[in-house]
Length: 514
Image 1 (cartoon, rainbow, N blue to C red):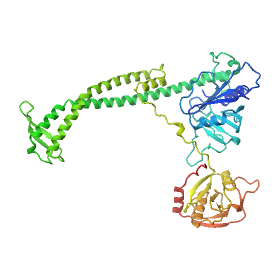
Image 2: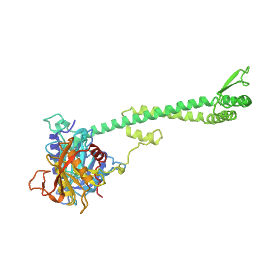
Image 3: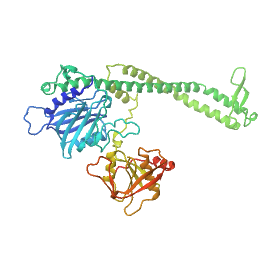
Image 4: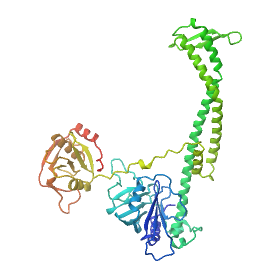
């Protein structure tokens, strides 16, 4: 079952009076998308007999996204948690919960907080496989998010660090239901002791139902992973056994190799470099039959003799150890087969069994990327950045609002501004040092980008406005992207495909300022 918008509203109505005014004492992360807020009550609360702490679980778990008070025991995550959870701790520790409410009547929960850094908000999007946790600051600007949402090629992502949060597109909602949350989930009979039933029965129902579903999903994933790990190790051990058996078979023929070396040594005078084989009377066999010995034509006769004796000594050394190696490999295969059988038992904890197998040396430790080494996503820039013919930076606005930001807020007065003359399009800024005229080739580069990032992309020629930024102003009340010019000129541009291709190949996102 999935939580509907109606169920989310019910949960928020239950949690709001319980948690408003409580302070975040600690933030515990459970990668990849679960967080537990440890809350302590306000100093002036009336209910002296109430709990000393409450734990609010916000789970963007794809298998069962949910929000509830955490009543059951939860094993703390062992290991690094990554930049997202570090950002949560840095921004939320000590903040006070102001409200918990649904967003836009949809399957989203917004936890509003106030701390030393000002307004903070933690948004939980409960959209099944696309569930997400987003930390926001003032004006709903994204500070961090648990997972980057998918985006289509050629389109900017819906969420970007530093940009305002935007609502997701309409997804497939759970089937509509007129039932309340308790009717949908059923009232759990094993309510924990104390006053939980009075305080948060809906929350407990969610924890018992969806929490159990998430645990089952995680157990299934862990069992599947364990089976795959055991299968790979069994295959490797089988290959080892095959190799050892072939090695034992070859070692059993060591004496025959020595005999061939003695035969060849006695016939050195009858062979020469370049021979591929020699036929000799085999003194070691009954009746001295003729025996063919293969030779390496690149080697001298004495080198071929030495090669056989080297082979004999190698096989002798192998024969001394191969039986012991075979015994060890067969014992390991037997233990792996037993492990494979236990991995099929649903009553066995797959994660614990995996850990036991690693400790016993049957499996290698799982390779988990160190989340501390992952770079936090850079804040979104309102422009694309290109490099002109002589190294100057050329900035191209992404959207109408970004055009305003680029031109009015970021461009300097000495920079040169370009825009297609007869149609809408992106604002283009050629970064130019104060007191210097722009290079003509780079001005043409910027004009090519202005035409390319406009509706007339693909045209052979077009006029482009060119003006210094200090001659551009924003009329009061003008819509995003609309500016007025008090100077400048028109540049007639004939498109050069090779110039445009060179610019686009060198495109890069602007560096994050330090």
